[in-house]
Image 1: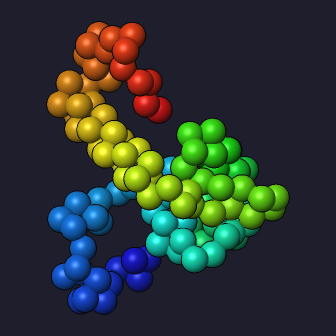
Image 2: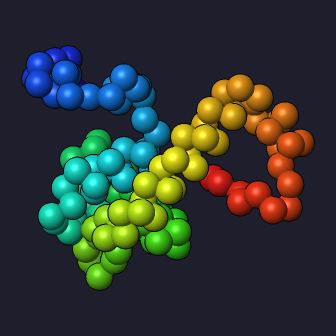
Length: 119
């Protein structure tokens, strides 16, 4: 999308919010999910997404802790547990919606001990 244009079929097939600005973690997960037939070096992911390699490595490590990516040095791939990935994405979207609705400070007040800390 860096050229300012996309193929019309990609446009037609996209969800309504698909082209919203994504944070780096979302971009990495979406990239790995889109290319789920391959495993990637962190430096290659960083190059493809225009990010710093150290930042990508740190994000991948956090995603691994959450079971969302697999790692065999030096390669990374999206999890093969699609249900876990979909669940994490739904939780992320719910958190993002709540954050937009209530704001960070108000959301922290509403959080209970039973709620998972999503960051």
